[in-house]
Structures are given as structure tokens and as C-alpha cells.
Length: 463
Image: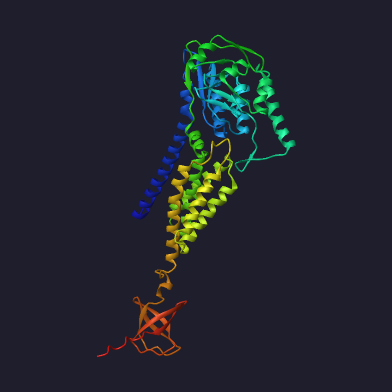
């Protein structure tokens, strides 16, 4: 066997081994990501376990998935109780419905607890609170204000009276379908939907909307120990919570990542980075990295748009800002176009997202911090593009245009001859006769033939 073939076989073997090793590493990482958390969750304990979940932000699909997985994990642990601590302004009705369905069908009793002091269980949180086996609140908290809001493009939609009644009656029927079985005061609960009424912790307890008031999670478990509750299916259950161990159930790394993406500030930054990266790649082909980063950020922004109520006017203002920044680089406006672009992008950020889900949309600080660098980079890149159009070609046969050559034989007017350019021999044709060894200037290139003209001799100096 020749040395070259031996080296080639060794190289192929190393490549195959590397690919196999990388594949095993990926499998190991996936296994650790999926299996190890589940294995850790199955650690038995002598005391009853209470799995604690945190519903501490807007109700959205990622949070709904987290609550669903937490209830399933509590069932696999054979936990004594699922404790959901709540502090939410509300959120999406579809996510709220998904959470309520899992609470109603949970094999483990579920307690929803508005906590800590100053927290709220408003809008969708009110519906979730009343769906629990045990509804509790901490002192100094409030709940209610659950009137449904219809939003399109981030703005509240004004609907006609018939549609408004349909939406309202659907929400009321959904609330009654489980609140009555939970023993709640349905008449009072309906006022939170029809009149947007809100209740303090004591008002909710006196009105039989909740079961008790507790100062802390430990106080709540102490009050519930030995209490008999009626599940949604009518069965009786005695809560054995003496010396119960509270086990926190945290968001997974994947859920934390996805939850971060759907935040308005992060969505706005991803949108700008995506646009800027793709713009850089289109104006400067071959850089690769900006296109890759921009493409990834653009896809992540599109994912967030699937959940966030994005206002189309905000998107148009951002695109207008991009156009103004490009025009600023092309025309002399003494900064007027750049200033207009900054104002347009700031307004676009403010209008981009508006709904009860987002608690105000993109913050002013993030909008300002992202707009100014975006404007400077966009203008700088466009000026590079415009300047590059005046640069002389440095590659290919076009670089020969304007170059000086020397005839290697006599050039007869209108007939082909040979010249030397950059040390290379080229066929050339000149409209005028040129003697051998004389300089010529290349004016155009036609295939492999150059069109040249005699180089003007410098004028003699006057003496």
C-alpha cells in the first residue's frame, strides 16, 4: 500500500471517529437534559411533599406549559399538594383556559395562593384562582378585574354590542362551569367580569370567593393540614400536610429561554438585530457572520410575534426609520433624515406592542439604547456601499481598464497586435497606429481582446 493511500485511510478514519464522537456527545447532552431532571424529581422523602409553582408574570403559552408540566410532575411524585403562588396582571385567554383545564383534572389537589403582600391575581389570574381546590390570598393582596379584552394588533378592539355580549356571556359561562362546583359565590364572581370589579383579600373571603387568608406559604399549609376538601369530581380528600416539605418546581432552561424571547424588550432587540444582520449581509455579501446572526434573530423574533400582540403601525414605523437612515447616507440632509429616522424608530418601539399581556410594551430605555446604535451602524454601512461604487475594480479582467501597457510589435490602425500588460501578453487593437515599444492605455475589454489608445506623451517643459 502506498504512503498516500495509507495517509488517506488514516484521515478518513479520524474523520469518522470524530463524527461518531460528536454524535455521542449530542446524545449524551440530550439525555442529560431530558433524563437527569426527571431522575432528580423521583427522590423519595419521608415527609409529604408540596410541589410549589410560581405564576409570577403574564399568563402566556410558555407559562401554561410550565404549570402543566408541574402538575404532571406532582402526580409522578405522588405529592400531597400542588401550591401555585400567584402574582399576575392577567394574560391570554387560551393559556388561561389550558391552565384551568389541567387544574380541574389534576390527580393532586391544587391550591392557588395570591402572594406575597402587594401581589394581585387580576383578569386571567382571577379565573385561575377560582378554579383551584383551595383558593387563598395573603394580606394586602387583591384579585378580580376580569372583564375580557379583545385586542388586535396590540390595541383594544371596539366591537359591536352583539359581539360584546357573546364574548361576555362566553366568559361568564366558563366561570360558572367550575366556580359552582368549587362552592364559590358565583353571583359575586360574575361582577368581576361584567363590572370589572376587584376585591381585597378580606372582601374576597367575606364574599366566599376564596377559602382562607394566610400570611405565608408555611402558614397556608399549617391551616390546610387535616382539612377535608371536595375535588372537582366530587370525591372527598383529607390533606395530610404535617411537616410537609415544600419542593420548588422551576422553569426548565428551555422554558426560561422561550419566556425571555416573548418579553417585549427582548423581542424588540431581536427584531432590530435580525434586520441589521440581514441588511449587513445583503450590502456586504460574503461576510457570512452577520447573515447567520441576523437570520437566527429574525426567526426568534417571528416566534415571539406568534404570541405577542404586535401592532402593524409600529412595524411600519421601524421600516420607515430604516429607509430614512439609508437615505441619510445617500443624500446631504444635515442630519434631518437621521433625526427623522430616530424619531420614527422611537415611535415604532412605543407603538410596537400594547396589550394587558405586556404591561406597557417596549420600555423607553431599551428603545433609546437600541435605536441610536442601529442608526449609526445603518448609516455607516450604507456610506461604505456608496463609496465602494466609486472604487476601481481590483479583480477580474475589468481591473485592466485604465492600465498602461507596452506594445511588443507595431500596432496597425484597426488591426490586432500584441501588447504587454502586468507582465502578460494580450491581443490588442488601436484606432491609431502605434510603434513598437510605445506605451498605450487600455480603454475597454472585449473577451480576450483589449481596445487601447496611444498614451499621450508629456508636454515638454518650457525653457
